[in-house]
Amino acid sequence: MKPRPLRSARLDRRIRIERDGPVAHNGYTEAPREPVVLAPRWAEVVPGAGSETIDGEQEQATAPTLFRIRWAAALDPNAPGGINPRDRVRYPAKDSGRLHDVVSAVEIGRREGIEITAVARTDT
Image 1 (cartoon, helix red, strand yellow):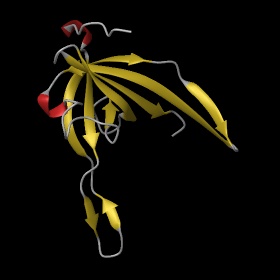
Image 2 (cartoon, one colour):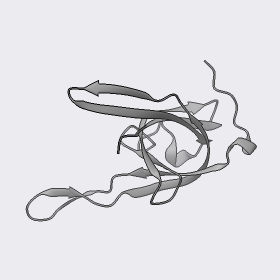
Image 3 (cartoon, helix red, strand yellow):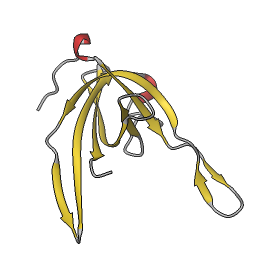
Image 4 (spheres, helix red, strand yellow):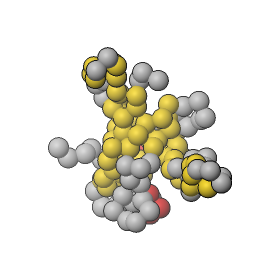
């Protein structure tokens, strides 16, 4: 399925793309530092159909979401250091926003945009 072209009117939601900070050794163990904000961006947000699974005695629910943003060299999924599955999206772009784990990121067209597929856990 070919992604539809980006239109400015659809980029009406603010998101934050985050990555874990460098690991710090505190003398006893290695602990990750605060997340680093890679980029706040305007995005088109397309929620997907959620799903529920039962694993053992725990019930887990997930909510997939599609984020479309304008292309940026620093976030290019095909370049080293670009957005990848180790990153996450915070939506809305504030500290109380829900975290979405990035599943995949692909370029739309020729440097027109980036389509990020992410999943949020709804049971937390």
